[in-house]
Image (cartoon, rainbow, N blue to C red; front, side):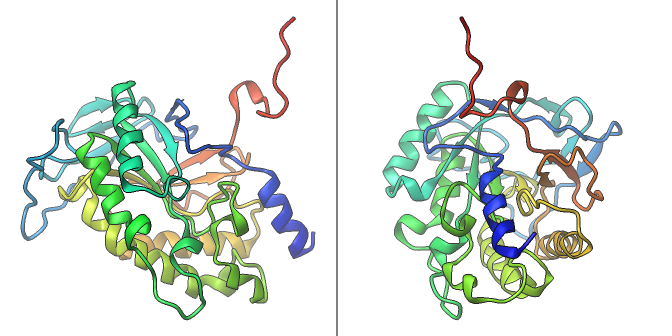
Amino acid sequence: MTEPSMRKAEHRHSLSRTMAALTAVACASTSLAATPTTAAATSPSQTPKAMSSAPYIFPGNDGKAHKVAWDKHSFTIDGTRLSIWFGELHYWRLPSQQAWRDVMRKARANGFNAISLYFFWGLHQESADGKFDFSGIKDIDKLLTIAEEEGLYVIARPGPYINAEISMGGLPATMSNQPGPLRGTANLARSKQWLHAFDVIARKHQVTTGGGSLLMYQVENELLDESSDRSAFLKALTSYVRADGITVPLFTNDYSMAGHRPPLTVIQTRSGTPAGRHPLRPIRIP
């Protein structure tokens, strides 16, 4: 398959036909280890204080480092089971910090305890040699803080490729001028540059350090094949994120691979839709 065809295929086959409006989904993994696994809590040099302005105190804003673990049944925090119920929020489609808070507050009021966030690389870096912009409606530090204040855990999905039905799947438009597969080792350096810029902010908000409510971190999204180059790309990104100070559980999302990809991340999930149905081809009921 040619590279242009591969890029089109990657946009056609999407895990998350998500909208800015919240969609109720249960956090489920097809390959959680049967043996309990732990992301150990770390002790920062200065323990953050609990947020005094938060209306709801929970492990994501109490200023304490927590131990995150999981088994075949669920996640646990400090030994207490946690069923994760979340919706997807595309912050760039709601260009207002007040709107972010409004949606999150309504999510919490409707029984959600987490929010899933794609992070749009192309929004934050418009030129190949340009600096990253995290100001105003691009302020992801504020976005994560709002989630903590509103009592929601965060599932962070910075890509680099996120799909999300946006141009280039979230990659900067300037990358269209680069040779070779954009999601491969040929472009590893730029991918690491973005993830580092994101990690510098995200690592201050982890449940495992007492900094905030970041509970899970997704590396890449829907790699369509299992070539040696793409596996090497995913492995390199995973190792880089760990070395960059991310201590919460990592996961990836296979595109209907049913777990065939080598277990490079801590938790593997795969794409799917309820009852195998595509949202554009609903079941017709007489």
